[in-house]
Image 1 (cartoon, rainbow, N blue to C red):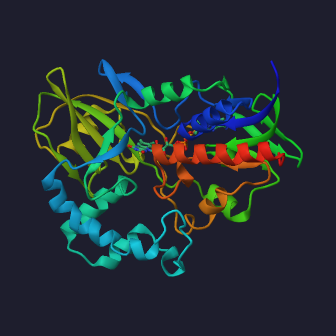
Image 2 (cartoon, helix red, strand yellow):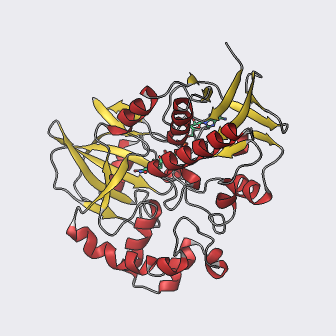
Image 3 (cartoon, helix red, strand yellow):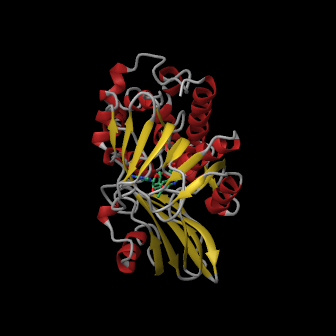
Length: 375
Ligand SMILES: Cc1cc2nc3c(=O)[nH]c(=O)nc-3n(C[C@H](O)[C@H](O)[C@H](O)COP(=O)(O)OP(=O)(O)OC[C@H]3O[C@@H](n4cnc5c(N)ncnc54)[C@H](O)[C@@H]3O)c2cc1C
């Protein structure tokens, strides 16, 4: 087994598998180190209720779904984003305009500044609790045909990387002429360059240390303690899509997703998984009865991304100041170490598509460094 590669890829989420595939297709030797016993990261398909369900990221396309939904949602969202074009005239350059005046604004500050009636405020609060990263006035995301599992299998089939699962990395040292990656078991792997594509970078010691703004962002961690619960409910109930304020319900977004063997599958998004036990059918049923009074929950399925040591949070929502500082700097190479991942994607942070885009971009940058002799 060789321990010297052109590139070490740390993290086999969507960003990592894309970068690894692209570099291996260019003919570079690449090793992909993944802490979990599977690839895919925060996209995760698992069997539940006798079928496959997606417990992490799943949706990638827009579609216009429900006009009632738009009647309630569109005015408040329009209000929320009405200055976006002025603030971010070129979406891939968040620092193009001086936004220091709103840089420190939290979502709560933003909602408060609207001074809107309670009902509208609660609709907005419910949407933002889990979906602000995904919202588009034309409707909601669509699931990938065959799921993220099919997408992952297709990417991996085109890849000739050496994949090592159940191999958490503990440190990365760049001595200026090569990089040494050390796993938790103390195993050392050498390479000309490294791409780090994960959101638990705080657990990895990087030498020399990353720039202060990036370090600050990483130390403050992913603030999103959200999650997704699937509920199988009795019978084929009428389609609905609803939002609830975080102050009123542990489930903030709920909608009918599909039918299954005479029953209905409901997708629930929670802004804080600590407020509800996803395995507790009674608790999920009580929360869903705020949306549909007589609903009967038969079974639930979920994955706790917050307590999972290899994610420590769900999708990403940057804390005030980080988007135009830490996240932006993290997109730049740090010596021979490059970063990728949905959390630093632009213009849409925290998405499958964004993760894949940053992976492809990091692969291009590293390939150019390798080809030019820089690495
Ligand atoms: C519940 C939920 C719902 C979501 N819904 C959507 C959606 O509908 N649409 C959408 O576009 N996005 C969605 N997202 C976001 C999307 O899933 C992520 O943005 C995307 O998958 C991130 O990919 P990534 O490769 O950047 O990071 P990750 O998927 O987090 O990959 C990082 C990888 O690194 C590994 N790792 C961690 N620590 C170490 C270590 N020390 N050593 C080695 N490996 C390590 C992890 O195990 C993981 O495999 C959702 C996320 C969640 C949690």
